[in-house]
Length: 486
Image 1 (tube, helix red, strand yellow):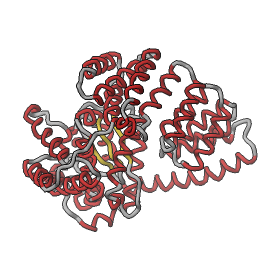
Image 2 (spheres, rainbow, N blue to C red):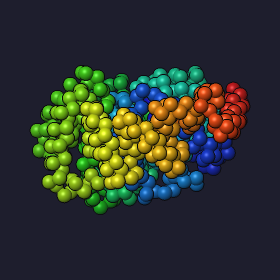
Image 3 (tube, rainbow, N blue to C red):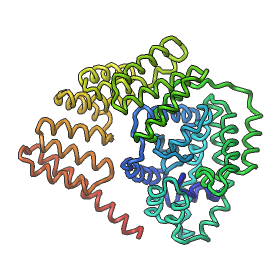
Image 4 (cartoon, rainbow, N blue to C red):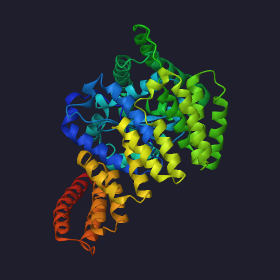
């Protein structure tokens, strides 16, 4: 998946001209449309604890840089994809992704935060909007081709380039000439965010320096991050100079950083061989002198055991992990906002078919972590598996009052209805889930099925008719937009 649409950072400084063709609202809408496709990709890491860790880290950085959210104050979304190559990327409107390979390569939280800050810099400076606005003058890359390039070339930026450019080499070369300016701009913003958020500024120096050194070992096969974020000696020198001007600040990495890396290592390759390799890695990591590495290794071994369906071993290792954390006030404090431990426990209990106990643990975890969406989904799954469909339905209805735009909640509500034989309600909920995912035609089809359901009442039919009119109008506007683009 090419970062920043392969060439989003290779742009001239267009100033306010970028606003003429792609307003912040349109930019956000485009990002949401692309994310709807990304979330359906099998390599999208739909893992609650990892997603929550990345978003907590990202929001901590954004607290120091509220202007990065733009005049519409949109929420950023930070996410991970399963890919061993070292890469990170940004989509329009504040969607920032990380390859699993990059997460594992970061040796400190400050290194990871430096890449995150850099990508936030690209979004804040609207480099993507500038590129898309510039396509009218350069006849460059239609939006549909960009979206295809994003999804089609995960580990091969060359393939993405071929797909996106359509042979327009001259226009691409023209934009490449501006890459250094855009990259320096993102470095400057990212460095300031990194420093203001309390991270070690040397993290950017260290990580980018290691990237630069790695090119000597790659020969022609340069890491994708360097292809799409050209790294020059001048940039490295500029970052080093900025770091020297800052007073030394030590940043103590929280335990969630190490646990997130352990989870990602397992999730990156959950095949039989992948789990065996992860097991060997964690066995070796147990010998580390650093306590955080030891705890992360034990947690990783528990996660591997759970994936291998050895629930007794997983429970034992997780208990040992929790006991070791409990002996350190510092480590315990760093875990207060993390769902890493309760989420794994719930998965172990559910895997062992202890659904009522899993639901009880999830209910307790929600009290401690009211903002954890992952725990909410686990709680509902446990209730449904425990055949407590009515309780799940009531809970989901309450959740949807607060989180109306969450397609997962609608999908789970459809499951709760289906388990109770409420066919019309099931298909209405499915229609809402599809609509939120951008699949308007599928949503309309679900409403038609709901209308023909034997238990559809007059009230249901009124809801279906009103919603169908709304979705058909949106679908018509969507098709009109597609015609204009071609």
